[in-house]
Image (cartoon, rainbow, N blue to C red; front, side, top):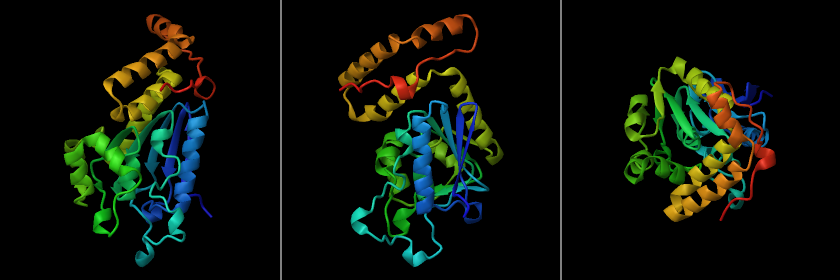
Amino acid sequence: MSTPLRFELDAGVATLTLDRPDKLNAFSGAMGEALAAAYRRCDEDDAVRAVVLTGAGRAFCAGAEMSDPARTFQVREPADFSAAAVGFPAFRVRKLVIAAVNGHAIGLGLTLAMQCDLRIFAREGRYGVVQVRRGAMPDAYSHWTVLRAVGLARAAELLLTGRTFEGDELERLGVASRVLPAAEVLPAAQALAQDVAANAAPLSVALSKRLLWEAPRLSPEAVERKESALHRVLFALPDAVEGPVAFVEKRAPRWQARVSRDWPEWPE
């Protein structure tokens, strides 16, 4: 059987490709398991500095598998069911994760993209969290990811209407980091990921990302406390010397800290 996900690592950038192009990369249980495993690998492997998630063919992900429509939302063990879809989501990966949404992203396809840190969309695609028009409701942490990204009113427009939107509308809604012609989406995402992989200190990115996703539920005082504690961790490491020196000497930095080895106890 062919795998529903491709994993490629080049120059510190892991490209994860949803790979069911004949089905417009419709999401299956096997795809969810493969994506969770790939995200865990990216989180743990210091050779991975940044991650790009994209789709094969003309779509990013057309949503849930609907080959048997009447059984789309049936689950074998209801007590064990989770709406998370992916057991280890993109926001838990301690690396920058960019969604290169190369084409249509419907339902779970769009909620998967909302788990990423940045999102670049194809202008030609159609996008929507349509679950309320299918007798279900939004999933994959979307009541948290979408709300924190765009605010209540726009989250309601996305999640509660079930409408589909064109690429340019996603800029108005604040969902898209950029909207580009489809052929430019993956190259743009990979170029950004390669720049981060080459120039950003891995542990600095990892700590900042964790705090960035955590911060909306914290008070300003708690954020200051955690920022201060994490700065003290970073300032004690060689990278705090290497960064400024490399900048002044106009050369590529040689980072020494590793996420897997130097991750600190998280401040309370």
